[in-house]
Amino acid sequence: MTSPGTQDASPRVHALSRSDYKRVLGSSMIGSVIEYYDFILYANAAALIFDKVFFANLTGPMALIASFATLAVGYFARPIGGIIFGHYGDRVSRKQMLVISMMMMGCATVAIGLVPTPAVIGVWAPLLLILLRVVQGISVGGEWGGATLMALEHAPENRRGFAAAFANAGGPMGGLLATFVLSGVSAATGDQFLVWGWRIPFLLSAVLIVVGLVIRLKVSESPAIAQIEEAASQEERKRKMPIVEVLTQHWRTVVITLVASLGFYSFQGILTSWGTKAAVSSGVSRELVLNLNGLGAVVTIIVCFVSARISDRVGRARMLIFASIAGLIWVIPALTLLTSGSGWGYLVAIVIGSGLIQGTFAGSIGAFISERFPARVRYTGASLSYQGASTLGGGLTPIFAVAAMAAGGIGAVGAVWAGVLALGLAALVVAARTGGDDAPSGTPAGEAEVPDGERSASGASVA
Image (cartoon, rainbow, N blue to C red; front, side, top):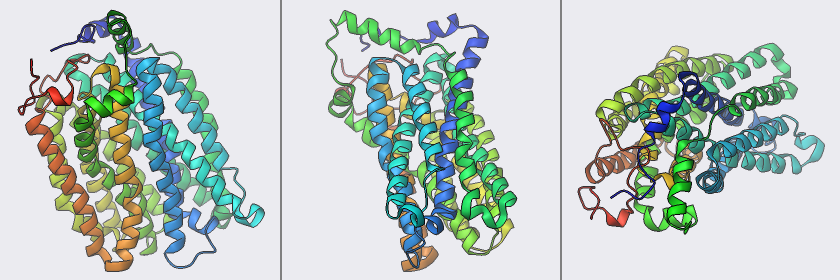
């Protein structure tokens, strides 16, 4: 049952020139590259730098836990950003929200590079770090939903998974850039890296923001915005707050998609954050670990696009289920290799775990979540689900891993990681059975807007 004004957006896509369509995809990717350069740069710094710079007064694992706690703060702020930016993105403009989120992220990242140490301003140093991390979290919380939807809603129906992957591929590209910049600066500054060299990658974000804004300001608004306005005028603009509608009419979709995304984020939390520290502590050099992370990101990007294209043919949920099962199989081998003290072992763990498995997750997760919400609340709903998963899967996993390692070693860490993956797999199975796997052709971008409570057990709408 399709609401007025929510027909397929693809006719508008065909009105775009080829160059305009490429610009939309490029903007989604480059914007995500910049946002995640800033975000992943902080994750690497939390693992390798901030425990020594801002929490050197703490002993044992407490300094690292405190550093990872500031990382988690950013993840907790992401759902807030998703709700705020989603509200205005659903009611006003996808494009405007993306411009604002990029500016917020750039300013916060540059400011982190300027925060004095505790030796200069005492306790205000970690407090400022936390505050700026919150701004980062709010910003990236608004970025993902907008970038994904700008690509997906401009795309033809049979290429929406591939289009949405441009935003998700921006994540590992940003991580790749952050990793190589941090590694290069570490090598160049040597003993001064922990004194002042670590600040350089944060300050370089200012250059990236200028480039990103020039590109992003040239793209056209999402066609879904015009459709939403048309539908609203036909209904005398009696529109609820997007977050209210999402939580009252689509809450089951939020829960299922959030839990289904946990496995994806657990790989980021274990491999990118905790695994980096574990490898360095086991004897692998900091520069080598960072460079191997970069190599893993290259594989992630390639696999992301390949799996996204496959998902347009076989379905998003099927691809994600495959990735979850592969992840469960890889948990113990990955943890053994991460803590082996071998650079080759770390390479294998990262290429298979971060590259192949997380890349498969990344290729399908954006379209999987977005297509399950109606266009008028899609920015809010998709952002709430995805960013909620980022908080639980990405923000808390490194802290749990540190605590589990201290309490029970690799086995305890493996139990935590496998538990998260199993929970996500169960949600994906439920989504595939009750919601119907969304392929090969999927649902039109302005699909039927059926509340969760009005779906039958098979996933079909009830007339």
